[in-house]
Amino acid sequence: MNILKHNVAIFTLLVAGMLPVSAGAVAPPQSVVPQATMVADNTKGLYVVITEADPMTQMMALVLSTQTVMQGKSIQILLCGPGGDLALKNSRQVMMKPLNKSPQMLLADLMAKGVQVEVCPLYLPNKGKTEGDLIKGVTVAKPPVVAQKLRAEGIKLFTF
Image: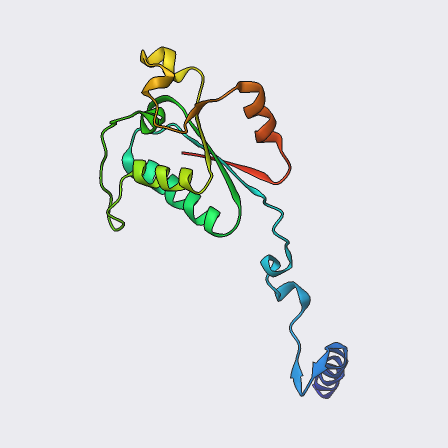
């Protein structure tokens, strides 16, 4: 039994001698340091595609887009399918709490901040609408340009 106690004592001393010590405390291993603090933010901005008809989903997409702009990143918005209705003049507005704003109001706020908003090229002809039916500042997307923007370095795609 004495040999076992002796071996355990030697092992304990060896292990203790290998641990880094700072001001009497044992330093945590590097793997404990959160990796997020070591990662640089290479994101330049977001390309946001809204296809959903649900006002709550549209609102969340626009709230996150607004926050992204406030954090100094770029936003580009493409509206397709039912999401394209956001760009129509006199579209039905649903006020959302807690902001007491509609998705259309947030979209207008983003556009006032310089955010480019486009509708997909299939939207207007398949909806029986023209560019004259769109709110001021919304344009029709060109697929080659959209594809190029989606591939741009530092741009992340968000779809809602």
